[in-house]
Amino acid sequence: MRTLLLALLVTAPAAAQEAASSKVPPVSPPAPHVIDPASSVDGLPISALPAQRLPAKGCAAFLWTRTPSMALVAMATTDPASLRLPIDGKVTDLPISAQNGIGGLGYSQITEYRGAGTTATLQVVVKTDAGTPKSGSISDATLRIDRAGRASVVIPVAGAIGCA
Image (cartoon, rainbow, N blue to C red):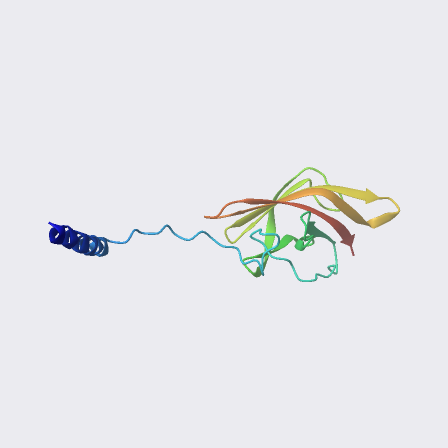
């Protein structure tokens, strides 16, 4: 009887291992989109813009995140009316597609920019000072980025406007 029990104990784990190895391994779910922290601003799917210059004509709004890094993430120009963004490690200029409301210095309260599967909506409150007519500030703004097949992101931003 002792030999039979010992034989069952020795052969049972081997049989279990053979059954386990013949099963198809479970399919793992697809890996989530991982944002490279080296190119990302505060974990957002956007990187920082390199230094930008004031255009030769019109105005430019330089927009920084209102997150811990305070990174320059966008530049909106009035001539031509476009928005420059660093998406997926590439600087992209999106032309204006719609606007609504008066913001000041050539900007609207809500402006939509669209191109290459990306729509960016900039909602701003522009403040100007009569003593400095070619400049302004943006203390309260949001930048919403919608991309085909990806989650939308809303970024709180603030900025400064300079005009040529």
